Image (cartoon, rainbow, N blue to C red; front, side, top):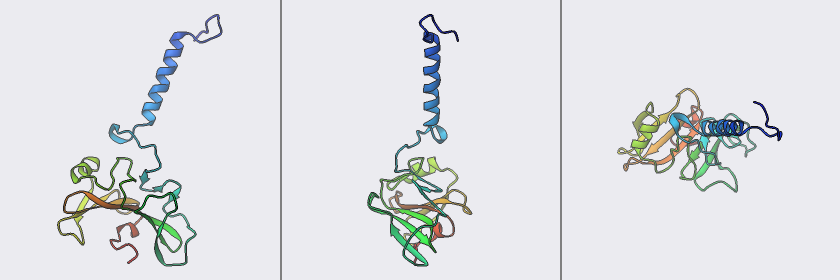
Length: 171
């Protein structure tokens, strides 16, 4: 594009650049199926949360398996599972954290089904009226949502097998 005599780009060029920049921003901010991707620190992914990555070595008290709080700035109801010094799982009982699709504590079953149509639904081990939903490949990192008799998520976890599938945590 030719610059005008003032040395500034033409108004047509300015509109094209602004339009391209807006398209880039809108494209970058959208997650699967046109949902807006969360941009905050509350996003839990199948591979971890924030700087925490499943499979990372963690300095923790010597123990074969431990459920530990994460730190001072973590919402209540969030713990990490360390097995032999390796981070393998994150447990969430707080609505403050969510997946990229915005599933979290309190999400109804109908919404989970819409967000994760391929989820595997199983009976809940301790609540005969509840259910457990597995989202993602069972042989790799995935989510496990536990729903109660009201058909809402009461707790969920992300991590790697087999530990992410342990109902009792380290028990």
